[in-house]
Image (tube, rainbow, N blue to C red):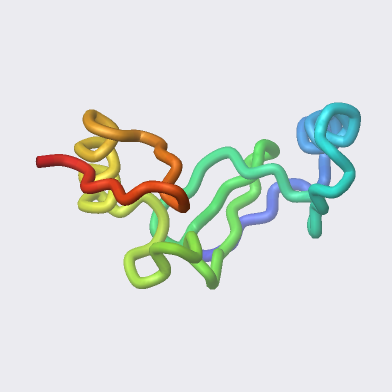
Length: 97
C-alpha cells in the first residue's frame, strides 16, 4: 500500500500521548520524531491519527520479512509459552523444547 496522510502529524491524539510521554519517561530517552505508532503490517505502519507510512526499515530486527509476518508472530507466540524474557546477557537460554 502507498502512504496515506489523512492529517499532518502530530495531531491531537499523538500530541496528547507525546505530552504524557514527556512527563513520565526519562528525558534520556530521545524521541527523534513526533510519531506515535498504533499498528504495523508488512512494510506499512499506522499512527494513532490514522496516517499510513512506508517503513523502509520494516521493523529493523525482521527487515527481511517486514512487520508482523505470520511465521515470526507464530514463533514469538510459541517461544513466549516457555520464556518471554530472560537475563540473556547473563545466562544462556534455550527457549522451547
